[in-house]
Amino acid sequence: MKISFVYSPIARKIGAGMAVLLSLLLTLSCAQKKETDTRMQEVIAVHDSVMPKMGQIGQLISQLKPLVDSTANGTRYQDAITDLEQANTAMMDWMQGFGDRFDYAEIQEGKTLSPQKSEWLDEEVVKVKEMARAMNESIAQAQSLLKNNEASE
Image (cartoon, rainbow, N blue to C red):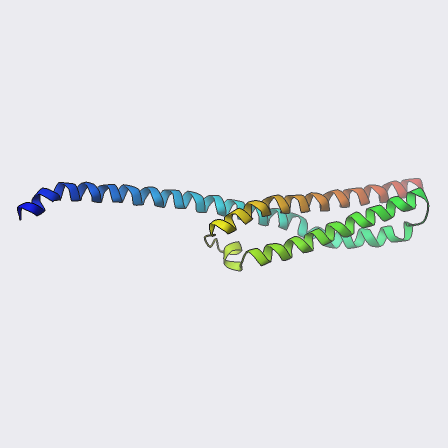
């Protein structure tokens, strides 16, 4: 009995230390999960902001095609079509790649990501912003060309 009495204060300190360590680990884990959730939400928000513009890309291409000819202006219209098509491809490729990397539970339900997938998510933040930039710029350029064409008629 004396032995357990002697070790009891040590056991209590170890137990208290373990409780503090566990609490610290849970806090860090929750902070990392919250950061991951925020990054995932950011990626999805960027995607959702440009996805509705996919139809607009098709409409702009249809409007630009009749204007393409061998003149300088005609080549500008063809360049705008090429940019729109590349933006469309960028969206499709990004969605395919993102879907290959992450499953539904990780995207929609906040499932905890592995360290590798967390790194991938950092990459996806950059990729989705670049894709959105390309889409928005190509649309703005095409709209500007069409507006200038209408003004010159």
